[in-house]
Image (cartoon, rainbow, N blue to C red; front, side):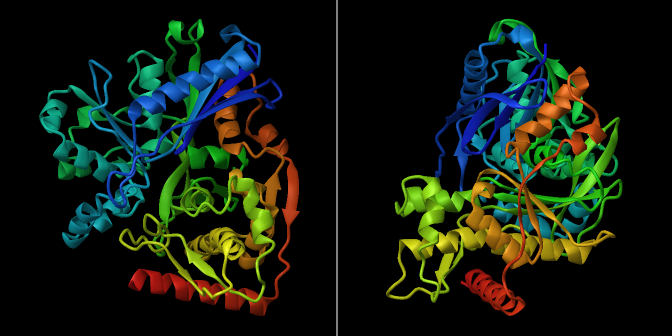
Length: 495
């Protein structure tokens, strides 16, 4: 048993990745599923799609690698965070579609709680802000809007979980209703200092605490899969939300280490060690990982739209057919035009946290076309990342020299986007050889617990650089370009 199966359940697709005893990818299977947008700013998933694509890709990857379940030592799970599922304890059926992390329908609930003076209490206990992004208000909305839901919840008939929790429940045949500390920390219901669900917050939301899963370390015994799924029982040994998993996969184990992941959204995490740093710049204080009951904390900045802006070029504007066409198209853009795209399609995340604003584009001329749109789309990710890093460094500056940003995720494969990122933040950007850092992070969690993979120090030493990007933009140009971006953001929010 030398293989580890990593389940990577994301916002637009589910993937299963098999890693061998050397932590190298042996096989990958991936399946996209439909996104549902029932109203402006609303985003939903069919819960059955999350499960069927997960189970299907797991079976596919085992077949593709020509191995059997007997060869798999353990399973690690990483998942889209904050996405909220409520299901019937007896039937396993979801009582509503999953409400996705991008969904903004609970903005009015958050505004009302802020007006009542509750935000300070939420931030102090959970490290989070009152924003529709997090699971707590989504759960409240489901209980408020599904007929009979709150009564059934009080009777102990309903369960709540983030996607990891639901998948574990399905994988174990309903034997385990659990989650890990990193996912719990994203719910707006978990006290990250005391390490337990907050009764005060659950009472405020009228959420029965019996609905909530047991919280475990990121590396723990989460249960055994049903034997009929893969041919034998396989232990689930590691779980982490996708951005925390990427932090692990990037081996950001030392305070001050920083990573940024570019998937559907963009998420930057700064390891702050065993001390939760309170942000004065509307960043999130969260749990990076937890071993032996001891959390390691991080500051996090979240951008809602990163890779999704390329999907918009493809599916919305239809100016590209595949994501890989974006870079060569952007490279042909007119250098004399300064088109700025603010991709606030579902509001703006950190450090603005404006749920109401929507996307805008500035600087259009008669000559603006697909190339300029592609360039502005890629550059918007760099600008938003700088917003995050400026806020992080204002909150907490680690000792040492220059800050190096480790990057991963699909968009990090774009040399153009990563060079602009380095230019606009004025700092080195390191891209690793293994871009599957999210899956690698939970594979390592499960593998080291199974005794297949090495411990933290040896794992960190195995991290290898693919390419380093150094800033190649003058300070005057960097200042002017970023100032134009800041004006565009302010104009977008004022509209």
